[in-house]
Length: 405
Image (tube, rainbow, N blue to C red):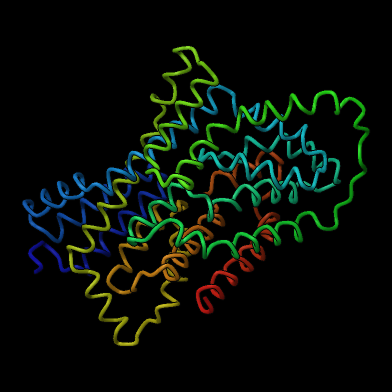
């Protein structure tokens, strides 16, 4: 029963207007989600209900697990950067893989396993070296580095956004990943056809390569082992991601043995906590929207035939991903809006996730895109002529998977 100051629909409009302002002002996504959720709660519920809702969200085992997993993954990614183990990972791979086309496809994707804001900048220098051999222009260098970094996330089992989507919809990560495989294959194919197909290169003399290949393989294996350990225990042993992330951090620390000054930096980095509280805010917003009664109002429109479910699952998350510039925020808000309207099965959850993700990939506020374009001294307009057809192909495949499987 509605007991707040405003009816659910008006309260949603007011709250989401604030959300839009905060996004425009580039307020941290964690603060944005939590403030929006609390405003909506106080507009639609009394203070006692709000306190109960916050308590219920804070004590939920699933919420705690996702928040801890997010924190652990962020800590590991920051340790990779601070210990410079990320440099060993990228440099060793560039010496192992001698085909520039294969290398510029693999390098951004592997570094993309680390969810660091603007992380495409890490692979840009090496991608630049290899794309120079292919004679690519600045806009294609930008596209290749940016695009291939983002091909792996739809099937990456320890992606925070994928974990969030699975937990919110009550499904397993694997159920969603299975439906994303064709989408990822289409993204890789689009990246190769649009960015690399017509490029030519001349093989270099590998004179001294043989003597150092084994050492570079060992160097790569050492640098990749924390990520591999995390993935292995999640996929192979079905261990909770929060525990797996801790294992990954322990392996990384044993390998790098950082000094105390280096060790403390990830824990002092605001980005680590910004993403972590965003995970909590996503669940709080979901619970507030459910309790406010907005889902029932929105569901009445859908049930009356005013809005098609497929259109909702495509348009809402894709537009939000583009506007919010965060897959975390887009998934959280989309689920909050559509919960109770759409029956979340693996097929609908996968379409919501990929819509949120592809919308985010194309966002002009996407830090990877902005920083990569700046690095290669290229205008965003020139890059979008490659990004738009690539995204269109991926979204078309996602819709076909939804309709056929």
